[in-house]
Length: 102
Image (cartoon, rainbow, N blue to C red; front, top):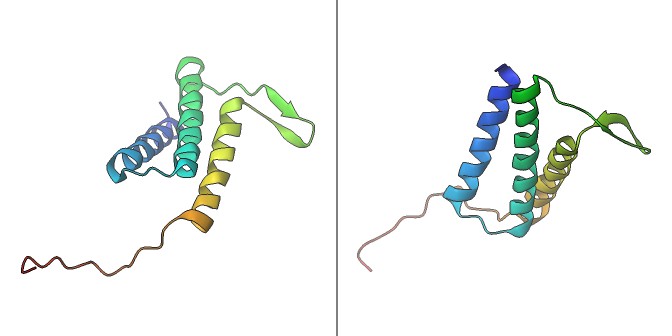
């Protein structure tokens, strides 16, 4: 395993942890993270079994040749940016104090 494999594994694990630990239920966020994790796992499987990623799709309006996992990662990243910019809740940076006197 090389650096890309470790980076891919840690990234997928981190995103999976965020979904489970933070209990996020927003469908746009879940869709974007699912696409990113799925694409990462697809590329990781190619790297582990073949030693490289097979690129086989070329679109007429997008010159580079990619594979389906690359498109999933790209679409997931775009959806994540849309979520962060337009739909994420802005939280206070100040911690809330819990008083037991109430």
